[in-house]
Length: 152
Image (cartoon, rainbow, N blue to C red; front, side, top):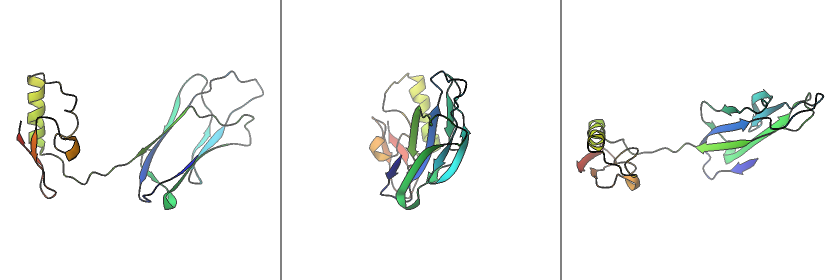
């Protein structure tokens, strides 16, 4: 599997899910290596029978020149091809804005809990990113100082 990114600095977290979903014959075996951009990052992998085995990256990976490559390559001992049940790739998104003042966040969350306010938009940081500011709040948003909740 290959893809390209217009941003060569993008970082990715990978999750690959494996499970043997068929009854293997006694002389059959399934064993393979997981390869990211030409480098073996895990293996040999032998999917467990009817159980999920997940491999995930603990730190973000990059793609050389914005070209990403993911492969499953069977080992010489394997009689069956690789098996992949699900594959997830998450891009790291940098938020250049400063987080909302911690005391303001604690106060507004206490208000939310005390008065049992249930608004779907009241998740995450109350003031940033600006396009996801909580409904019913006003914030002092500047790029140089910590955002503060100014109105509730």
